[in-house]
Amino acid sequence: MTDPEESASAPTPLAPGEVGLVAPCDFVCAQSFTFRSGQTLPGFTLRYETYGELNATRDNAVLICHALSGDHHCAGVHSLQDRKPGWWNNLIGPGKAVDTTRFFVVCANVLGGCVGSSGPSSVDPATGEPYGIGFPFVTIPDMVRAQKLLLDHLGVTTLHAVIGGSMGGMQALQFAIEFPGFVRRVLAMATTARESAQAIAFNEVGRQAIMQDPDWNHGAYPKGGGPRVGLAIARMMAHITYLSDASMDRKFGRRKKNPGNGDVYNFDVQFEVESYLRHQGQSFINRFDANSYLYITRALDQFDLAAADGSLEAAFGPVQAETLVVGFTSDWLFPPEQNRAIAHALLRAGKRASYAELTTDLGHDSFLLESEELYTLVRSFLERSQAPVVDFSI
Image (cartoon, rainbow, N blue to C red; front, side, top):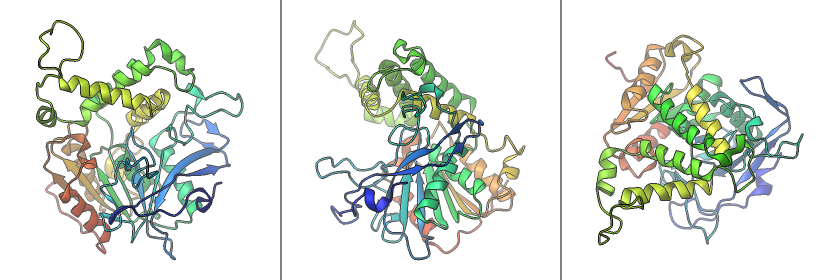
């Protein structure tokens, strides 16, 4: 196991409210890990980052769980030359909604990922080659159990909160079920208790784009190679589901890329929205592994909290955490009614739960964007002594 104090220097603030310079750490678990599928690994690695300090009672930790295309780098910057901040930098930092002067914030790249954590692109010690599709199938509970081992390693005795949007919200809910005495608060945003047929269908189109690319080669491809065209198309298609018609129309409309070019009888980029999607696809293939995309989207499809227990109420039976669920009006991937259903089920199960719905036209990705209303919700939920029970008309 790698000691975080040996792996990362202390963060250096760049500006008020900013975490500053951060460096990732690797948690190397040497014990055998058994997946829900029954498959095993002799050990695994999770890459993670931390911000703030763990207090003397070791109970001020906040776990951040990332979405499908996210990773461990959710705040701060990695160098003075590369100033691109973490994906939730607007939410996390000194004095921000997740205040790193009060909380010890942890974020890990999920098991099955491709940014330092064990996944299909990792080398199988038995063969010396990447696992490819020989890597064990990963579920949301597997991701959560691996992160719990990381938190144990860090000395965390209680999670003040676990927070996530989309797939991160699934992990947050699973944490409260899997480790009920360990989690005080759950904040799940833009998420669902199980994917709809439409969401599964979108994921399958993305997987087929990858697997039908001849360079996928049944998952056996060299580092830097593989089904780059298929992965780019999968990303383009998925990215559309993260937006909304209104936000795309406002940002792009029908504006032309080269309005002075009279030649429209070809298949080159003509509209700005086409250029934007192609850019999204190209940038994604430079940072994400195609096999990880297959594995993680399948984990999303298989996530169904009610499946084992027959109902959401029964599934939430073990939960002890106070829960806040946040939906967004323009989210058509995991729409507000799916988020409300989670809060309703928690209340019917006798749990402390509340629900907030934010009006926005930014689509599923609203939880990632700047919103003072969202910041206020997060801050008040984390800092109040006890979250109230909100009564719904059910």
